Image (cartoon, rainbow, N blue to C red; front, side):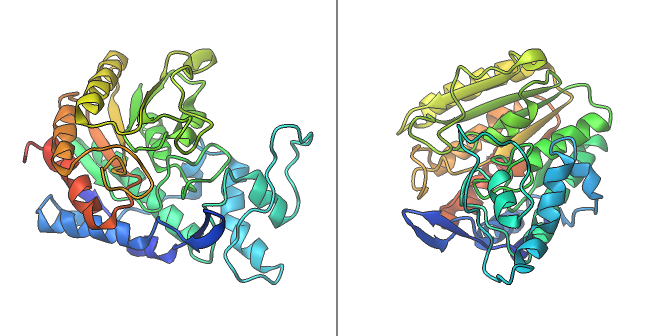
Length: 343
């Protein structure tokens, strides 16, 4: 299996507001480096650099004004005399009357953010573009008749909505790749999100559309980040009604329950009959992940890959979460090895 990877991801390493304090983010460069080392040690396949794409390739999944904000945010921040990482100060919560885009960077940061976990620094824009380009190159590989490809994206993307960043995510790599597939001539695309956390950003982007089926298996939102999305009652709107499927699972979920949900997801995907399948590949479902609470074990990821292969759709794997750095490479690559029948 072809792996797409760019070392430009190292240009971004953020902080986050967690447990009442600013600390180094769980989302760190070592995550991607550990996965890459495992790709190489298992002989999964060639590792190549992503192609370059114009920023207009991100529009469709995201709005133009959001892309403009991300591209200019660091310069606007430092123009105020600040050199620390940029985090939002205030959010447009329910009850605030104005929906106007603020003129200052502090207002813009809140307007385009859902939390204080996605800071912007000097290298963030370059890093997030390289991550999105990795997913775009992977989708192009499917368009050139590859059965599967692995986009080793970092930063991740599935919490980034049409006009907001959050949850360590800035550009929604999976959504950008899905839109690219449609632009290249696919009639329908499916996205299956197997990260522990609900892919609220991907849901936001495609919620009113029928050409992209979004399916997410995740922790119950009442007790799991991002809290405000991911309920089973969220099924899409307008033309997209019925094309959004959330499968929330309780704390302590182990492989038996998880596998049943995965088969349910597969049935929905096969009914959709997509020309391409994008997997938001998070392995924070692991039993020892520090910020999640499922109980999947390392061999389970081989089985997950095997089940996904049975959907028999050209498949792009896009790296998302997983924060137990010592095991992230083994678990992520196990999904890919299971998909290829190398288990």
